[in-house]
Figure 1 (spheres, helix red, strand yellow):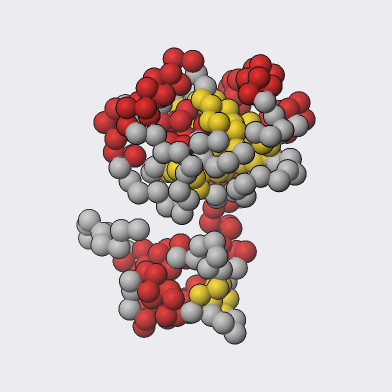
Figure 2 (figure 1 turned 90 degrees about the vertical axis):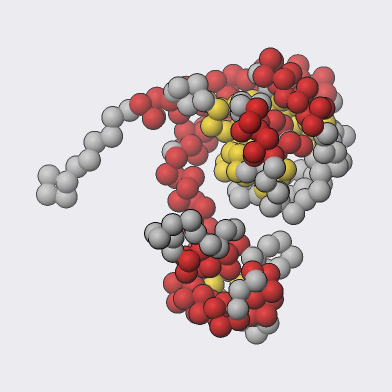
Length: 269
């Protein structure tokens, strides 16, 4: 996270607070003051003040072995999902898709060179990677990422992929630029993307883009399955048509939501 702003309105203290929050990662649920200072590069007195502030606000708790985030941090991410209205629109469609495919289905949005999961209806299965709201994966190795990368202009694509991944995951297969560009051309032409164990062993998925009322790709929706249980034939011949229908329905509902008039009623009305 950039700590030095580009203008006089940049609030450095806020940037430091967010940097401390994002220093907590999988496997580092509880961290000492020294751990956090090392992870952020901030001075210990600065980290201490940030932690005291976050503790008072309820976002951090202190324990015997250090500090840990509280569930209240989830409010920050949920506020984003709720503000877009995407989950309310997508939920019934995802639930129907899961009922018809018996596979987990998710929505993710592009953030730098990663995708971030923002909605999910899961089917209990043993898979190589755990996925939940907020999970990040390298976009170029996922079907959800490919359908969004394919919508970018060439210069924007290069800028986005130049950003380092913050997922902490090394994909099983990271395509070279020539392979990536050829695959994205194919995604643009057919309107959907497939990954077959590129991200991790056993993970197979197909994704379609979600569009707003102006036709811009704003997210991706996928059907995810285990390669040992679901064949490519089943995924492409049965699940894919249902997915494409669902993507169209969600996009249409999302466009209607965005175009609906918003009426504000005063408290005295």
